[in-house]
Image 1 (spheres, rainbow, N blue to C red):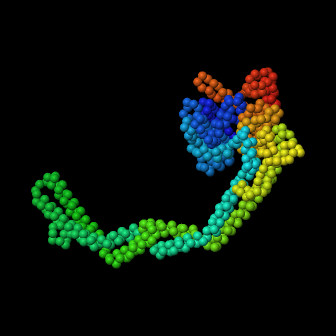
Image 2 (cartoon, rainbow, N blue to C red):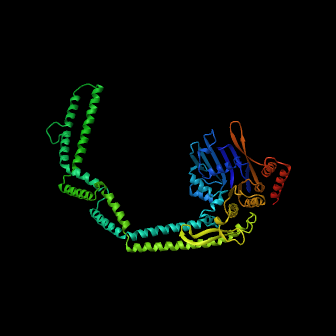
Image 3 (cartoon, rainbow, N blue to C red):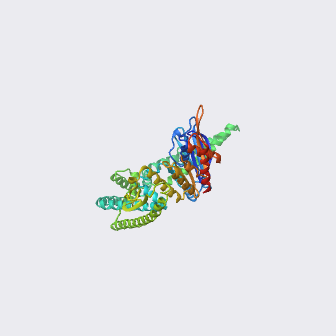
Length: 555
């Protein structure tokens, strides 16, 4: 149910706050007054396309929000999308003068697609062009499925259809390309077996190259290291060593009988140097003990590197990419390892999916046929009220090509007068008849819908008098089960409403504004009188208007 609609700087509206109640609400006004502004603004919160022209002249942005009472379907959608759940759901849309827009659900940023998805759980809009959609090929199927609540069954059939077709495509591809696949498999097997024989490990190349570098330079390392060691402590050399020279310097300083701070600092530094030289010599000694001069190991490492480099050149890749290349080749080979048993398994899977599709599509067809009979009788029950005389309506369901929506070819058939042949709706019905039949269909589908809020946008165009009054009663009856909003030019329809909004266009010296107000009983009489009698409102039209309101309230 729609609770409130807040509009700021949208089209001709500066600022507007509307509250809606239960039952049937009508919106009336003269042509061009701006009745469509309400629905256009609401449509933006429902995810419809935004345009820069929507922003009121002189404003930086338009801001529209609608508050709906939550329902189980909406709460489930919010939960699935990790959005805040509450008793009320606030849909908001902000449009800039550049045409950019931002959408929000309960304060969280969302896409226009998210708004449309959630809106489908909250509200349904029936427009005055609905009769034109009846001419579309798939319209009868969509209407019947919506009436019977078969949308989920149709989605299930569609899922099975796509799985079946995907498996069939894969099977055909494998069967048609079996010889090519065999050649690819043989080449991959040869390449993979070579790589397997190499038994290359991840990161092995880097370790081998580092080891080869150490082994190849081991002799030079030993020689340079010993020289450095002798330079530090002179243990194997008669030449003065660094540690010896440092000790001599300390001895000489000890001969100076002066406690000057600079001399103390010098003695401290030389003492630290002596300690560091000793530690450096120990570290160097331990390192040299680890340096291994091993010609045999060096030969093994160089041979292993040669094998790796040779294999990399053979596969036309860098040596460091050889391990990754091997793993990719293994995966490719695994994908082609389709034995005759695997092919049989896939054929069985295709057959199983086909059987599942045939069963589900058959059940869907049975459900459609059963629902069609009930729907046809319900639609025909409104023909007398819509001045369609003794016209007959039926839904023809014939077996057709299998597809994502099932196996049914569905058409609406009509016989407009007794004695005339029955024919497809789009060929037999006149424009006026098509509009009224469309209205009957919308009333029936709306009455059986679980949707908490229904909007009828001038669906009563082309009718009047007693027919319009009966249409109004139908909508009022629907309003006892769901919230109904109706934009209308018909006073007979407006008289049936529980709540009545009037739209006026107010022109000033500098700007034009649209004003929307909720009418009280007296104002409703005056508005109905205007709709009945035009500009000049007489006592007779006022009396007629009051009588219409009293009759509607007495029902």
